[in-house]
Image (tube, rainbow, N blue to C red; front, top):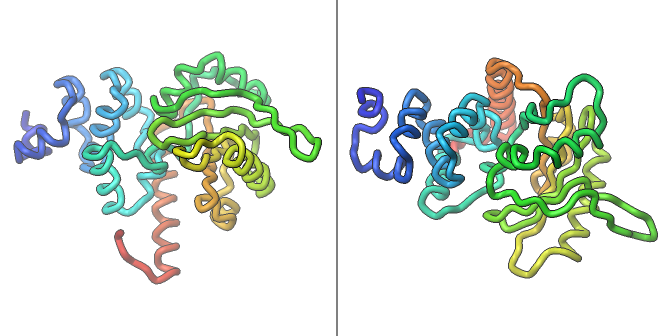
Length: 265
């Protein structure tokens, strides 16, 4: 109760932020000291209707630190969480992670991209839980023919709140610049032939075992609706995610210093 009062000294704040959560949910997030992190778990728990068990798993796997949202300025994080809570508005920063933990696939030592794809389909329910409940599986190895040449999109999902297709490409090893052109081709195809009038343009997600941050930054992938994330087949230590978060923050601070905009919005 002391933790509850320290986190929410004003009753109105308590009712607004924790509305829809059970007492077991509340006592699970109360030990979280960081206000933004606590608001994140409360908002996502309500939106995706997590059980207490799932909530504990998400906190234990450091979901907040793995999201693109956690790398943004505090004011932006607050705005996006408020819009999610009040307007049910989901953004790509809330949806996509920098690192996905796919330990449930039980892949060890040597495996191929096809092994990863097959394991995902066998464990589709847990895979979607890691990505978020609003992901719906559409198709695997979708064949498209361009200039009499066959191309295959690894996996296609649909995100209900973003109202768009999510194209997923699985790559072993480090991200390569050539992957961008391949994904751009797939995105343009889906936009031209599969997207409906009331839908948003598709988003591409390239999952690699190593992201290659400098190439990703130079290629301006976010503007092209392309995300690049790492995937891990074993749960690493919390220190691993903490270090990755701190490194991302340091790089963002250096970038802000170079372009001369120290704004926090």
